Length: 263
Image (tube, rainbow, N blue to C red; front, side, top):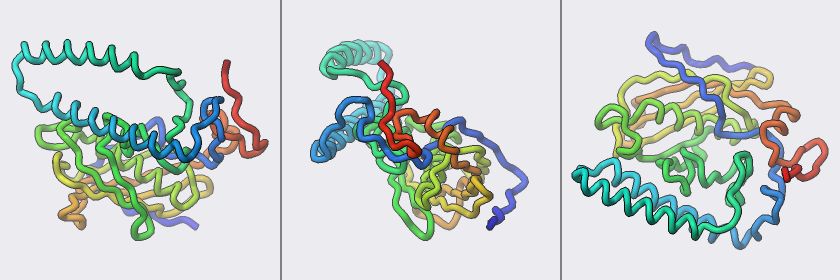
């Protein structure tokens, strides 16, 4: 049964992401990298350490984009960062994960994504968005920083689109319809201020075969009834062949065999 979406206003901006925040229905493989995954009791300390590093990196990024230090200080700090990066990189021993490899600390699809640029507590880029179930959909809360600024004092419009794309994709997964973004129609009603708590909401409004219709909004946490940004999206659940081709690190649900790890 189809559920119509709200008719959009006359002024609108359309954004069509090339990737989606959520993934299709295959279940995670027990070996994300072809190597033994850490024991479950070891994952929580690893996630906590990853989140701590992400938090401190975000603080460094925010300080760097806010500073008004003179050029000679910036050059000196850049030299310090370069030297420190070299030393720290040497301490991060072991193998670097491949492009399509699922991190051990992740639960993919449909769970924790530690390095997501939207929700990842281990990401130096993420706000990060905190997501909880609410009112037949998903509620998201975050505060954007100066690092996410577009016009002075306000968030870049692409940040709102990215936040909504993530939450709307997760809303599909929350009802058991893991899917990828086909289109995202974003409407900007008023600017979104930085350093201000935000409230996001997304819910599935209908389906058309494999197409899933989703609505999302961004508002100030202090004034949730007045949307600053709204979006209507179309998401599609890929068929098993396409899902396996896109995400080779996942177990193939048709054969229930582990993924093949490239040599």
